[in-house]
Image (cartoon, rainbow, N blue to C red):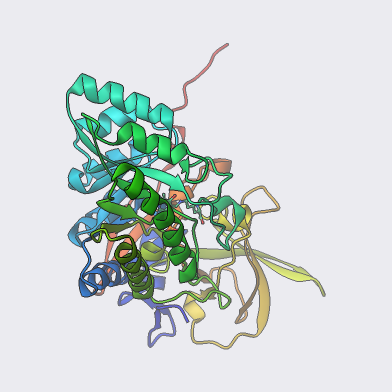
Amino acid sequence: NHPFKINSLGHLEVGGVDTIDLAKKYGTPLYVYDVNLIRQNCRSFVETFKKVDVKAQVAYASKAFSSIAILQVMKQEGLSLDVVSEGELYTALQAGFPSERIHLHGNNKSINELKMAIENNVGCIVVDNFYEIELLEMLLKEYDTQVDVLIRVTPGIKSNTHQYILTGNEDSKFGFDLHNGQAEKALQQLQNHTHIRFKGLHCHIGSQIFETDRFTKTTDILFGVLARWKETYGFIPEVLNLGGGFGIKYTENDTPLPLNTYVEEITVAVRNHTKQIDIPMPEIWIEPGRSIVGNAGLTLYTVGSMKEIPGVRNYVSVDGGMTDNIRPALYQAKYEGVLANKANQENETVVSIAGKCCESGDMLIWDLPTPKVDPGDILAVFSTGAYGYSMASNYNRFSKPAVVFVENGIDNLVVKRETFEDITRFDLTYEG
Ligand code: LLP
């Protein structure tokens, strides 16, 4: 059910390369990405916008997985980029990403972040709060320049996802409230500004969302407000950014829609609304992260020790865990996996996959059906391409794994495995 093949040796294959060969060559844990699938995901979004004939920007949310190589792929695919920090912006610039297609986000942008964005002429700053407006005004005066700006608004919509990844509801740290006058006050401050070109609205209602009606309901709410703003202020948005959040398949229980469906339904909804309030079709921007890289990545681990508690559970420990994938511990996220060296064998047992961190919550998968497991087997956990490497840590002084890109039968190391020297690189001695 995951988009990977089994080869004639009975091994799991990614992008035409045997995962067992990859584990031997690069060691484990190892993140492996099928670049072809990443490109297909990008193209589903971009081509659907072309098909429905709407001016659009598809901005990859680089928080899902940022590295120079992945941003080079996004650049090749003609995407734009969403960055939320100096570090993500720096990585984008290092990757040679065109700055006019970079959008800066963040609910507490520092002066340095804003300066870096202005100095590098980023395409858009998504303003989150009144303090940021003040900082931006001050800096733009100082630099005597202009920027394109969207304001991030919270439409007050609940999406059906984990509380920690909900972002569009009213009680949120992000953005201007749409219903209590805050967003309107921001509009008044930004419209007809000498240094700020106010282009429109941004909202992101959450992550891992399956229902298109969450997005169409959001457009209903936005256009309710835009209709008033047109009457009162003559404001007509040039851009509507509806964020990311399109869900992917982690397990059987997840039922994502094809990516083009989201684009099509959002476009229809926006188009209908523009007709109703008689304004031109704005550009539509979206910011998918997970749906571009999530299902294109998997993690390879080597099986080590095992513990059987008769009648209760079989624990199988692997050589990574919450340090390379915090999502099960943090969100109770569920994953599926297979023994990559026994991918053609029948399942005959059920095991629970434990990480090797000193923490009971460090479990990757509960109750995974597998063939008989032996130490040295290679476990592949699917759909780890988003928020895996990007949320990795050095807990227990584990080194972060390497990342390999595979495309057309060729593998390329794109992020090196950290060494012990890397782990102690910033430590200074203390003699007392
Ligand atoms: N745009 C904005 C403004 C966002 O806040 C996010 C995600 C995205 C786009 C991309 O959303 P995506 O298409 O990837 O769902 N660490 C969590 C996810 C946090 C998402 C935060 N914002 C996880 O591992 O599930």
